[in-house]
Image (tube, rainbow, N blue to C red):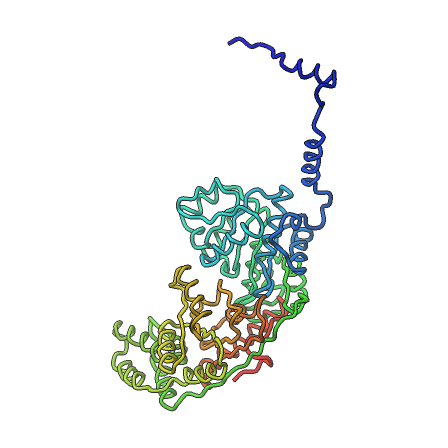
Length: 502
């Protein structure tokens, strides 16, 4: 192959010397200069990301949270703002900042399946980050910002494919679902390489103080010592601890928590109350009979008593299952007969009263699908329109149920799945028909309506039947709230404004 030296440049060079052509384009030079200038990051402090986000107007507390994570916490933090204050916006700001500064090239976001689409939309539209939701045909290595459900990520072959990647940043939404070191998702996240890591949860303590220990240990191993050291230093048990001021100081080194009252935003009020209910004599008789059953391998008496405080339909399903298992058939048949003969559900009756007094849209939270179906029938027979919402529904059906509730029905009857990933600011009445053991589930439920965009005071009704297990649940909820406030910080009212029990 013959290689010859080109002489084409000579003609252009001579023309420039003779001023027949310009040496360069001043316009192109200025454009290039401006581009280089835009790429410069003159300061280490402060956020550059806001210059490149025309579709986003972050609030002051969100900007401050992002700055704190980057400048003080080196990109490893728990974002623990109260529900509805925009933790995803804060995480997006941090991610965008690191992408602009060239410190992050690949990022993995793990979230509950119900929140995947929300993450994709927010990152793409508000932050101009080309995030992709993981599906079977998605090639992980080809996408720099990947969003995946927790349940998918922790299983083979997906987890092995993720381990092969070098992610610079890991973001975990609803991080309280990691719970502790024994869960599969916790072990998976612990094994990931994490240069930067954000854990998002409004409720870093759900049931006991050790959940916070495991979250922080995942983020910064050794920050609170090992398990034995932590337990010893703070005399920690599930629902009690000492030296909480010192522990709070350590926690605040890795946690950003904004409360509604600290944001400078004019929030509507929460009007929270406990509504005591009395069983009828017939209901009380069945409840006491359930307590007299012998312990079984299949179901605890606590389960049956909780179900009885909800509906005879929920209780009947469990008793029927016990009959199938041939457990105490004679006693159970007698109880079932009395149960099915009940004509009044005192709690449902009180619920109807509240709905009729509200004369507005209402969300009811129950723990049992059998109760959910019963309540829809009961309300319908009293002229109240309602729609159901539970974890069995796919995204399309969830969106449709939300639309029906907004446009047509007065009541949404939701199981616990309705307490996550759905925003209903157009509603401002919440009935906690069944009380959970976990106070943070109450906060999640209330947060569906008491969030940015809510224009009315929010009314919360916590139903509890006197002289039943629900009194014990109330007492335990207060204890758990106390532990949360000692370590994490004050919590908005979720049981009653004065923290009274039945």
